[in-house]
Length: 200
Image (cartoon, rainbow, N blue to C red; front, side, top):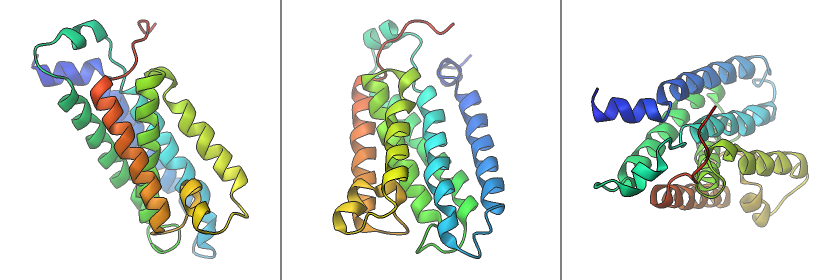
């Protein structure tokens, strides 16, 4: 087997790709049942939760089964880790965007792409700090709290802290999500996922 195939299998990438595809299919199906053509705000659950599910799937693929070997390898691992994270984030963004086609200025593809990047960044940082198994937890807690608390939030500050619930191309929301993605990707690329016991 080639090194690339072994790398993909050790990170369970085939299963992650299948789960991303299933998440996208579910998001498209769910969005079709919301009658969003009557009110684009009905897309908020899809715009918030589909990227969250996709980032959880990406987080599970960040597990390194041979942390000792990774740390003692001759070649640095950060380019592989970064390439994997960027590729999965890009794929998830492309797959989820069709769930909310139309109304880009409200809750359309830009909001889904932004949330996918932001949630993936939070998940990648959590993988470096908590480990891949629990990497989904901080993003889940944050997005859930913002979803429940931001219904009446207005103003410039709200576009930053409530970025998962912001429509369209809000500059503050994009800045917050991109910062989360860049910092999370950099931390994961440099440190890798925190070592855990073998998966049972």
